Image 1: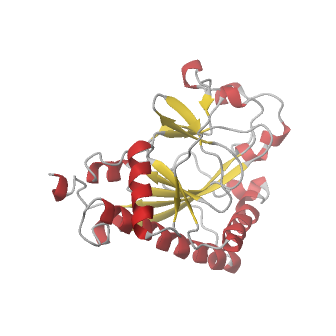
Image 2: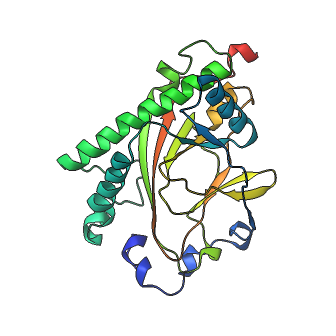
Length: 265
């Protein structure tokens, strides 16, 4: 069997045994509907947006942000070029970028179209996430620019592709975890898949058109001295369609010591 799931998953009728999760790790729990999802509207006043972010970070560990200023056309172009530049390429071409032995290996695509569109997308998402960190900074009573420099030194864009699964009850796209970084901003398209664990149950994060999901990371929970919580989440699979997401991660420099802000000491 080929090593890339996307090269064979569309043709199989049952999930190969080595992809089946142990019974206690399968997504068997009922997913509760989220009747009042945490949404932050950046066209609201700064005070209102700041309050929405703090409440969502305290109660859920994530929120969806709307009216953020990034055009839908740029988002669509970025998704389109990522899919066509890599995931729609022949399996033998994709396999050259894959290695099971070296997890640090990076896939680099050098076409001018990719660099132009994804570059513009990265710049706009960077502006958005730094704006959100500024609002968090103000809401926590930290000095202006607290998250600048060392605490937001590394910016990483990661594209995850989840091929369709013949039996989603037997496997996960990604196991339950908390993001270890400061904050993650995710575009999940129009396909369900993200679940967040909250109040002892899994809740599904329904896609909102042209919205980004902001996930509080473990390091931000530490910095806020638990005033904000890191969202434990997982990704489930889909039997009908593939799912592709774009994640943007804010990570401190490797020399940075992450600790509760002095305000909370």
